Image (tube, rainbow, N blue to C red):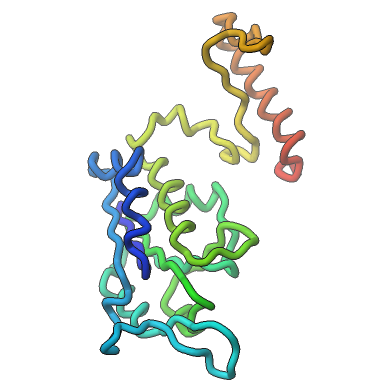
Length: 220
């Protein structure tokens, strides 16, 4: 998979790309991630990429030309171009599963007051990571990249992701590790029994119980 991230702040991704599973996935050749500063596609002498909105109002609006040129510089027949915006479709695990099937993702990070509306003519979809507003799309781009890359074949053990929360409209089951008792809190006996059939039954029951308690809306 290839992921191109279009942003005004490329240095925000330095730590993200060079740590943990994302770093390992790149080293394994499972994903190629490029950070593209769309300021470089500005035609103005000062590399300006925003301007005041027509009709008045506060803030600055990102221009069409530098962003569209940045998209066109990397777009292929295998690409899906995604605008990260609070007005987009809410991101869920189902969307993660869909995105991991693409060969090439182009993620566009907004900033300032918003985008020129005409940019929507050059993207395939809009995604929101929740009903709140951030200063820019860089953190959502990291979130989407992380959620997709971890599911690519061979990046993590498949058994680790099979029971992820939301994979089957259920939250994950509780997990425990050593010691068996900590300040009077004990590991459930079933997990020490060695009976894997009963352990699997218990875990399924716990998934349902967890979901009923914490996210009953998922069971509707």
